[in-house]
Image 1 (spheres, rainbow, N blue to C red):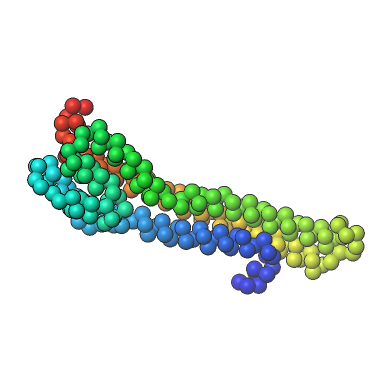
Image 2 (cartoon, rainbow, N blue to C red; image 1 turned 60 degrees about the vertical axis):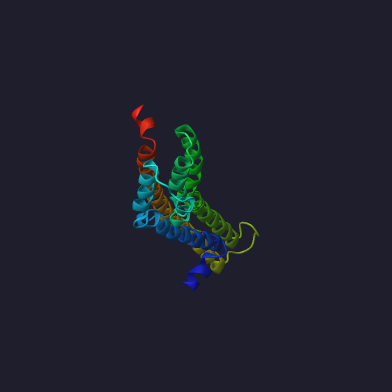
Amino acid sequence: MYSILLSAGWPIWPLLIISIIGLAIVLERAWYLRQIHIFPKNSLETTFNLANAIAQQKTVAEAEITAIGPLFPVGPLFACVLQEKANGNTADSALEELQATAQTTWLKLERYLGALATIATVAPLLGLFGTVVGMIEIFGSQGAINGGAGNPQQLAHGISVALYNTAFGLLIAIPALAAWRGLRAMANQRQHECAEFTRQLFKKLYPNLVNTK
């Protein structure tokens, strides 16, 4: 492997750096977007139990509501709805606060995906840059630049730089693009699930608003 890196020349190092970053993003997002992480066991049951208590006008401590927020990534969204109803705020006010909290929640679900898409786009370009560097070395080895005799060793090195960088660029870009599409689909699915759970929660707490629409 080390010999391949030497043959590929210095343009390969930026590709290696972004490949490590891309792999880290894929692993982190794949772990983060698991359903069991977004909606841990008993988290929804706990939330809806509190919603039932609030809807029945039972006394619910504010600490019980705020405790939901840190428990799981979408906890602040559910806690927002519960808190608005517990404070006696209207449905319109609750919707306004819910939309603001939802924006923050969606950003958490989509975090780093833009960087992964950038890696998938930039990798082929870096590979092309390495190819150009290799072609320059090839022309230099043939005396096209210096006007001297051809250098077979430099010619071979230029070919290696050109081919290896092209291959590495594609090798990084293709999996990165596939991973980005897969993780984007996972994020959209979690967002849809979260929106549906929030709708059910809002329907339970504000039944009059739902019935009038």
